[in-house]
Image 1 (cartoon, one colour):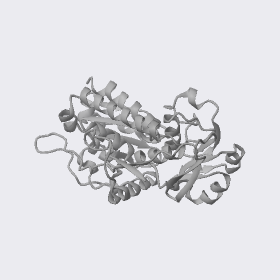
Image 2 (cartoon, rainbow, N blue to C red):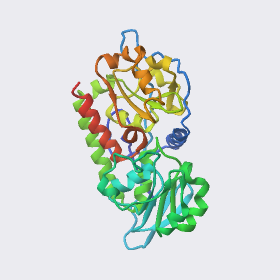
Image 3 (tube, rainbow, N blue to C red):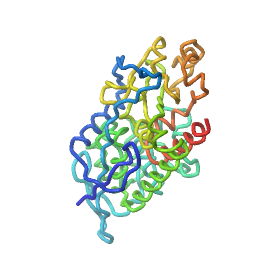
Image 4 (cartoon, one colour):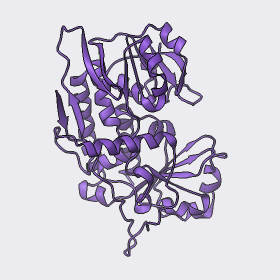
Length: 360
């Protein structure tokens, strides 16, 4: 039996419960899968401003609902969890958890579970820099995301493995020989539903629901700091990512960061309308004016030089952006805003938005 809830992904925070729809879930899966392929839609033909000179809002769909499983009964020893690979039986109180992606690590730490092992990100620090250092102490590095060292995983004697099909679907049979493996379909856009699956696997549904409720309250507080729901809805906020070896990305409604902005009532300009699966559009240096908005948050994956950040932000097109002229072009941490994916990351992003944007 499952208990559906409204998402915190709508234009303004809503009550806790609602019925999930198959259509919304399918959209979430498709959009999330594209997040990992990093394929943009190319050039959107939408105009970013209206006739009055204000930035036009993107046509963002309502976020998919989250369906919460019932907490497992106490004393059973094990309980079933619905996963992307079918029903999986997991221990009621897993003690040795291994996580193989960033969202799974965020979920575990959010729920008060310190994994015995985790894959590392493609960053110098290994684990993402926004995560509390004291909670990362003692977690064994079991290889890079997407290429875990299965011998290292097995050596930890886990009783539960958390990952997703996009990263490790081809290794599912091998992983299940090591420990019960709970996979979501993908990562990214459906992160709130994935969190519910992780909570079910860890048997921490009440703790998860409290975390979600606290996040919604936090989002409401930041919306008020931005001037209230009406002002937030009129505020256009584009997230730009300079990427080494690729064109510059402007993130759309159906990205992780797009959902966090949507929870405040704000979101991207119409430049992302038509983005494939709502994820993002890609623009070259000569098209960077399309990224303009009331506020532009930008990050870099790779070096500022190789990602073209240094070149673009020093150029006249960037300097002429309204957001830049108004002091609302804000450089942010790529590991937190783009790579993290989870409630711990989202809460930190909300704090940063309030600190850096509400006062401007």
